[in-house]
Image 1 (cartoon, helix red, strand yellow):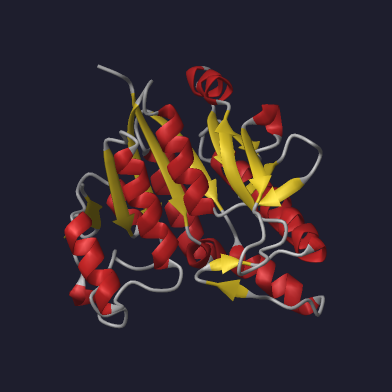
Image 2 (cartoon, helix red, strand yellow):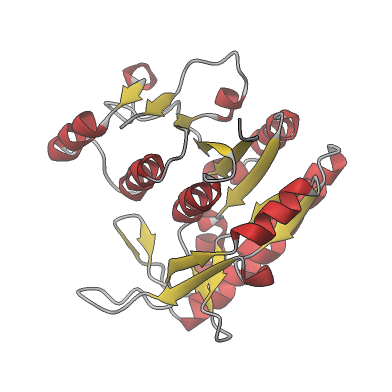
Length: 259
């Protein structure tokens, strides 16, 4: 039996709320077994970009990233947010290490080609250095990845954090029994985003297509669920979406994805 590995992606609403962030990091630090944390920080980056009078553009939950926006994202993601998370985890006796895709060529991407939309400096992942990440895990370190990758030619690239989490999960699934968690402020996927009691506890591919057709899944949930099913097809053992309380074995209020 392979060792268990939890890969947890944390959403921006929780990172922006000091109390929610503290509670989440406490829950994450208590997760048994090997683990990886992946974060973005879109709201903080957007707020700083607006202060700098930079235009924030989103298409289907994806950020259009020009050169100035990339500078802001790099400062916020790999600087302020990543370092503060690592420091807080260290304070919880969780031996975290900050990582970007550029570190040890962890995550290499290509700049997204221009088609109908020019996304700018956005990276589509091409390769993961799973042997390096495995080395960190076996050294009892907890990698904390920001949503920054690189093209192996000196160019940093903004890459969707949900995609990074799913791609890491797929790359490591041959060595570990991987559970992928997408933690955010809602209980999971909701029939009505304004009604918490409309939680959908289980979604398979057929139900997923129905929800797409009905327009229930939209905006940032679109790439999130696509990544969930990509992960399952890539031999990831389990994929869950919900609030950080799902990291506790006692919680049942979240969405589980199945093929």
